[in-house]
Length: 386
Ligand code: NZQ
Ligand code: ZN
Figure 1 (cartoon, rainbow, N blue to C red):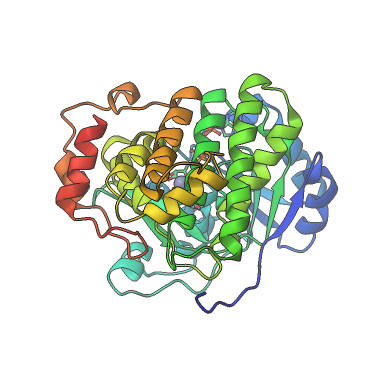
Figure 2: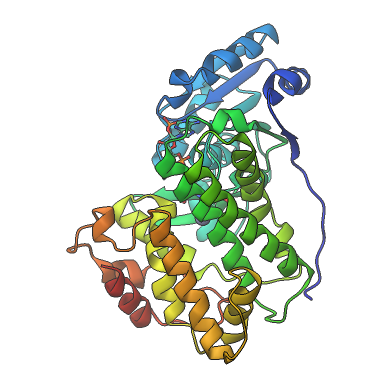
């Protein structure tokens, strides 16, 4: 096992009416000027906005709204939020939404307090921001687990890069499963598949022998698979939503990564697909995963074989390790079809004229992946997904 330090900075309030019960006490700890950040307006339609605004007003806060944070948030949007936060002398950011809003605010909170350009600070000077406006998150869409980590995935349109930036941890996160009930079913499924992908990408890291975190990971994957099926069968099942909401946080809050160097090659490739096409993250992963994994069958045989038996319930009887590994990839591909996720880029309406070579060439190659991919082979994978 790799050496590790463990501590957790984000306090989670999970359950129905969590905002009503816990937000007032959290707001009492912060300054008067609050930036209320959200996306394209779903929170206005489902009543979450009214509820939170009421709590903010009762707490005596002066509220500035930062709106229109788009799925796949851009670096330009980060700069807009940072300028607003500076102008309004913001003491605290309340981010309300899914991964996009939550990620955008992580970098707003840093950019607002420095003259340094965060992108060049992190990618050119190899530094990291060290002061942040404190933040709280109210999760309305599950999947990314962004509320419990300090990574933010931001699209820099000038550089044609969708890449992780390191920002602040949220001091608290409110996870009310009722808030997620209005998510469109397509987003429920692509979000939950993203959580499954995070678990697999972590499992597939190194060292390659199974450790304690991997065994929790296997249970997390089984849970996500079961509850995706349950939610598709019964969209109003609050219990299944609750499970998906917490499993999403668990899959990306670092717990499953303890003692490991993670893989995340599929994510790096999908992020660049996103930079060039602005596609939905979970859908992009669903198309790429089976194709990428078929290229790794001989390097990742043991880990794939174990996922076949421990996650997908494939009987090992009479099967070689290589056959089990292939059975895992087949089971994953069949599940993606079963739950209605796309299996090709054309189903995602990604044009066949997309510059796939530029996408492959600009993809970060990860150290934890069982296979050392070349850019040429990543291009082959992308072309197989068309
Ligand atoms: O913008 P609004 O109007 O709010 O609508 C959103 C958006 O259109 C809608 N939505 C959210 N909650 C809703 C709702 N609609 C109805 N009812 C609700 N309760 O859902 C749409 C998608 O939201 P978004 O935040 O974009 O989705 P998601 O949570 O999947 O986040 C995706 C972003 O997170 C990044 C992705 O790359 C992508 O940019 N990721 C962040 C990670 C992290 N920080 O740990 C890890 C991931 O691997 C991922 O890369
Ligand atoms: Zn993801």
